[in-house]
Each structure stands twice: as structure tokens, then as C-alpha cells.
Length: 451
Image 1 (cartoon, helix red, strand yellow):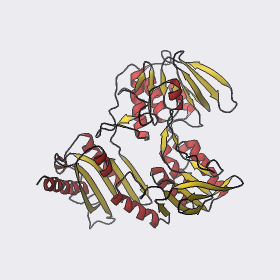
Image 2 (cartoon, one colour):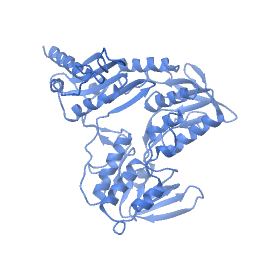
Image 3 (spheres, rainbow, N blue to C red):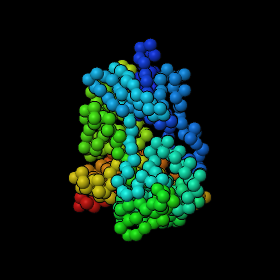
């Protein structure tokens, strides 16, 4: 049995089916929503009209799973209880409320995450949305199409908040972003976050940092504004971009172990207990640099974790080693990328570190379309080991983070990185790639700190 029909759950189901036939292993997957195996990351671009949807965001629908993979996917079915001693699930059909039980031998818990929704007055009113599932995205898209809001407030300036703010701007909505922290995009250091703020304001978004929301104002049960400690912001629609938390209520009630991050605890094979597995946004994993437990809800991790669980269920052997926190996003044409530790993370983990920041271009300076980009590296003070990296720029800037991610994964020093054999041609990079320039500057910083 599989709880959850998106990346983690269906990757596990698919991998198990590859190794065990339908006559050997019956697979049933329960999904509360309308869709399976979809790209939640594509929701802002669908809302903004950049891509079509929702079908274009679905990799495999339930019928495909049934017909081609002999996986019985039951959408609009919500699992309401797990009895581990009896090996039975309690299930409710969402549309008619019918309840029944389903026995299992192996269970994959892939319930995902749920948007953080503080208990503010007015937060349950019409026009207030969290954005996590494709059903959530469909609700936002329908509201924008039908109600045609003129003003919006996005609460939270993380990945989802920034992407949804841009999507609403594209739909002609006046957008204010309210963020409790002192900068947008707090997953990067303040100096890089300042560049993100500049890009957001250049797009016409009003950015209000250092403001704490106290309530949402309403009229006739519809949202009309967001009240903060600095005043009130009008809103016909409110998007909650406050992050997500692991969806582990069922797991907790069943007695499955939860970690400090709130996620389900697994071993490296994604096993929770005998015959019990978990994968995706509902689990905690380990950060390979700090070696501490973290909750990093990304589809890339969910697919890999589900694959590992499915291989093991199918009789193979696979492990998931952990994460380093690589992520990219964009604000209009500005690309933002990060991997590893920020300065605050490095300090909290007890590292002594140095930093190096360079300004360069994405292409040879003389080649048409050359755009500025900023690369920042964080390295351990004595050893020079790379601890983290951030990139802000335009046009092919963000994907350079992959080179830094590989260097981090392999515990390279910044000295090692200076000799990396990176691709070069004027349309794609200067003769000294910005990554190499930053590595050289970081080597100098390490040497200076040692002297």
C-alpha cells in the first residue's frame, strides 16, 4: 500500500513494480487529491500563464498507472488511520464519505507536506490560499480567472512566495510581499538577498520586510487585506508562502518515529520499521555537510527517496545518502541559486569560515547578451573545504550552481576547484569561468586567514 500519489509514493510504486510482477505483488496507492505524479514546482508558471495546465504538469495519470504498470491508483481516497499491529489502513472516499479498511504487507508513507497556515483571524476566509498540491494550484488559478483580483498580498518571501508573486504580476495583479525577516529569500545570505529585493521591486512588487502579520481583514467572509504591525495592505487575494511542514499526523498517531524536524525518521534505505517505508516531503534526512537532520521538501529528493524505497521493496538494495540543499529559482529574469551552507549555517554548525564574492559575466564580455552575475563561496577557514555557494545573475547563471553542488558532494577544497576543467566558449562563459574566479579568490582568503 502507498499513502500519497505524487513523487515519493509513485516513484516507490513504479520501482517496486519493475522488480516484482503483479502476480507477485499487488500495489494500491491512495491519493486524496485529483492528480498523481505531477510537478508542483510548475504551479506558479501555470498560474502566471507561462505554461498550460493542469494536464501538462502531470507526468502519469491514474489510468496510465493502471493500464501500463498494474498499479491500482485510487484518487479522491484519503487514508484516515494506520493500524500497525493489524496491518490495516482505514480509508475514506472523499466524494461520498464511504469508509472501509484495506490490509497491507508493505506500506510506503509518502503523505508529503502541508502549507504552514498560522491561526490568524480571517485566515480561513475566501481568497486565502496555500500552495502545495496541484489541487491548490487549480484553486488559485480558478480564483484569479473568475474573480479577477486587482490587488494581492503574498505572505512570505521564500521560493513559493516569490514565484507566486511574479505569477500574479504576470496576470496584471498589483502585488505586495510581506516578509517577517529583514530580507526576501532568506535561504541566501543578506548581501545576495538584497539583489533579489532589487529585482522584485524592479518588477513592480512592493516588498515589505521586517513586518509581522497579526490578522487578515475580511468582509462577508472574503479577504480584503492583511494587517501587520506596520499597517494594513489591501488584498483581493492572499497567498501564504510561509513554507511547509511534514504531513505526519497519521504517522504520529500510528506511532511511527518523528525527528526533531517533524519528519518521519528512516534509515538510509528509507525504511521506518519492518515492512514500513517513507519517502518525500514527509521525511527528515541528513545534511551531508553538517551531518545534522534536516527537512528539505523538494521534488528531486522525493523522487530519489521513493526510488530507493521501491528498489528495496522489490528485493534490490539501494540507499539515500542525504542532501546538501541545492535549489534554484528566478524573479523575472534574475536567477537565484544556492547550495550547501549560508554564513549563518556555517557559524551555527561550528565552522570557522571565509567568504569570497566575485562579480563577473555569464558569457565573454564582448559577446552579445553578456549579463552580470555574482558568485559567492563559503570555505572552511583552515582546510579550504567548500562549505557553500550562492549565485545571482541572469541568463544561464543559476545552473552553474550544479558545478558547486558536485564540488560540495565530493568534499573538494577551493584549491581543488581552481583547476576544474569547465566548458568554455564565448557564448557560454568568459575564458575564466565565474566559478573559477571565485575559487581563486577563496583560495586567497584561506591563505590570508592562515597568515
